[in-house]
Amino acid sequence: MKNILVNDSFHPCGISLLKTKGFNVFEGSYNGQELINFINSKSIGILLIRSATQVNKEVIDACPTLKFVGRGGVGMDNIDEVAAKKKGIITFNTPGASTTAVAELVFAHLLSIYRFVSTSNKLISENPDSVKRLKKELANGRELKGKTLGVWGTGRIGCEVMKIAISFGMEVIAYHPTLDEVEFTLEFFDTALDLRIPISPLDEFLAQADIISLHIPLNDSPVITKDIISKMKKGVTFINTSRSGNVDEVALLEALNSGKIAHAALDVFNGNTELLQHPNISLTPHLGASTIEAQEKISDELAKKIISLVKNQ
Ligand code: NAD
Image 1: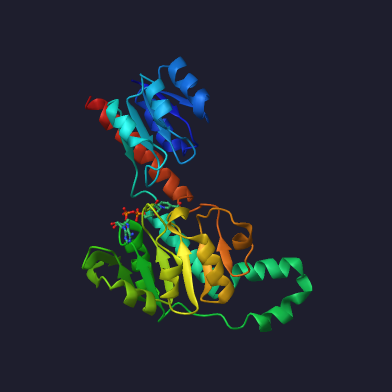
Image 2: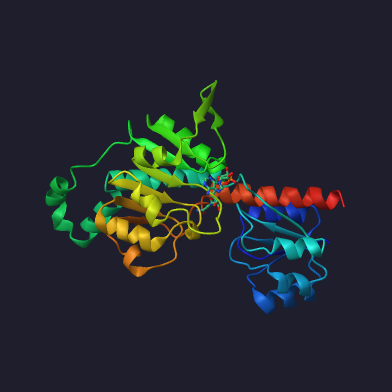
């Protein structure tokens, strides 16, 4: 039980904590049969992963020593939870650790789009003599203050995005299929303000938002479809930091080409080259949770969870 395989890279703080508590920590980067072989050769009881390792039924069925599987981050997409449950394996994740990191990335994209930050970088580095011309060409940036941000999905990240948006002086509207309103607390200096945002009917939400940011788990089929896009305001900015499968990327590309969606920011995507090379797209390679602070929180939370689970066994 005290043998742990840390199979995707983790911040060292949690690993040190586990070692001080007497766990034998092995670090690796295995998948498939190699993963099975390693777990069995070291009698691994606890497996810690991020998104790269697939803990599927084959792995679960072939590794009888495995008792806990912890995933750093939100979602359990890469763990077969049904198979794990059947074998009595406890699975867990760190849902809140990356909330701030993802929410801030939304605004990194948004500010970059609204003020041509990455476009400027690209154009100036391609042609350093173009600065005077670009100053004129890129003079029509926009301000976030007063714009309406539509947050689709009002869980941890969606609420954090709304808090930041309010600090920018934006109007916020929210959509959720079953809730009537969403509550959160805005903290500043030594004041805490409890806010309630009513949930908008979908058609109103789509028609009113200048920017739509998606914060839902992976749904069974895309929620951002051709039909949904057709109901959005012309010239909307669309941001997806959730899961690529939530967006019909063919419909997104069509909308970017027609100008229905003026700009899109994607942290998660499937890789259609025409979409990825579109001039009005802002991309990051799934960096949502990739801050030093989030990595520390993920590593620390997983280590503490394991220590408490093993203590209570
Ligand atoms: P959460 O569970 O706190 O909130 C998700 C909310 O979406 C819930 O309120 C749920 O009821 C709602 N929801 C589900 N389906 C919906 C739908 N079709 N329409 C509207 N609402 C719907 O999750 P979270 O922590 O806020 O994470 C949100 C998303 O962010 C997840 O997909 C997660 O995988 C993703 N994420 C991405 C990164 C990254 O690196 N880009 C990092 C962390 C999380």
